[in-house]
Length: 103
Image 1 (cartoon, helix red, strand yellow):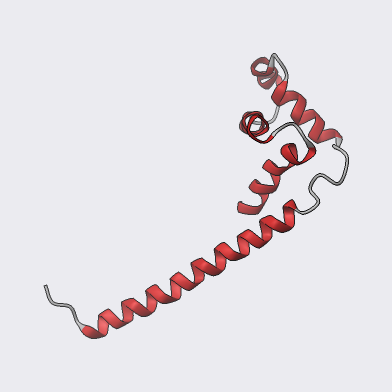
Image 2 (tube, helix red, strand yellow):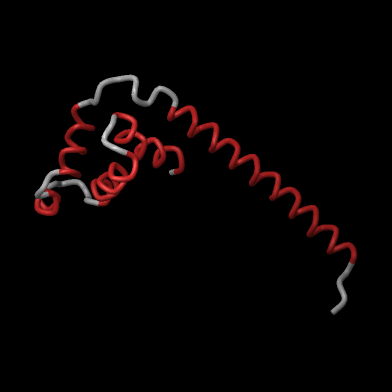
């Protein structure tokens, strides 16, 4: 199989341009996440955060989710997240910070 040298150079230019863009995008996302996580636990828990946490960690949470008007995925993710990262202000808020950065 033979390739045209001009098309090969064009492909390399496109690949270099998109590769640089990916590095820049990842770098900006890391900076954005760091800014969101900076002083994340500085304030007290707000009412909506406490409600979400209570709903995600209550002993009857599957039944509570059926009565909730919001979709249950966030509460299920919050339950798993707090099991991994702990029950602190940062542990509770960091899920929303990560989702908000990458959405």
